[in-house]
Length: 76
Image 1 (spheres, rainbow, N blue to C red):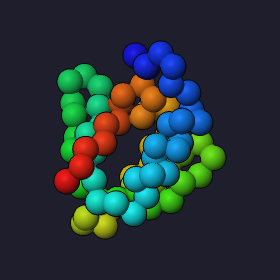
Image 2 (cartoon, rainbow, N blue to C red):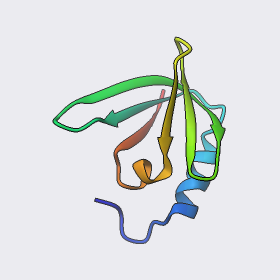
Image 3 (cartoon, helix red, strand yellow):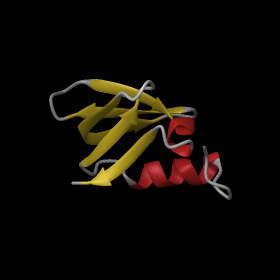
């Protein structure tokens, strides 16, 4: 469920502020499966952003995933 008062523009700005900073993310993949990755936000696009993990894997997430708390960011 998304936060009331949040919209995609503010979510994009929050993700943009994390670009280049080493963070940990938790991804809710459904059915009680949660994955955790360390890395940084690599690139931002109009509807998605890419996240590069410390081992070099590239993951893609939508801003809607962040808005609905499917992806959560934590400082390392």
